[in-house]
Amino acid sequence: MTKLNFLCTKCRKEFDSDVGEISFPIEENRPRFEKDIVCPKCGILTMDEAELTELGQTQLGAVFFAGLE
Ligand SMILES: [Zn+2]
Image: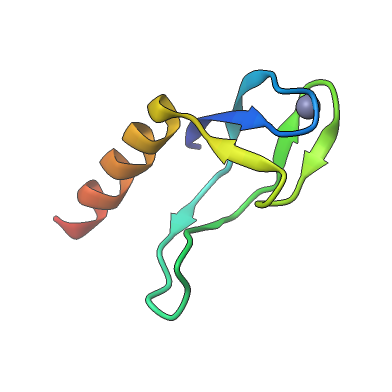
């Protein structure tokens, strides 16, 4: 399981969400998550409704580089 830190664009709250396996399809310009992003207040969010925070981007980058090894 992989937790990433997101900002919900609906309630503007930051939260951690377990997104499961993360893959980086080369044909898409965004990563693909196994599980839905779930805001504790708003429920399931689409990728457009959730923004990665700076911490979340760092966490995602770590997963990406770990996968390259
Ligand atoms: Zn929310």
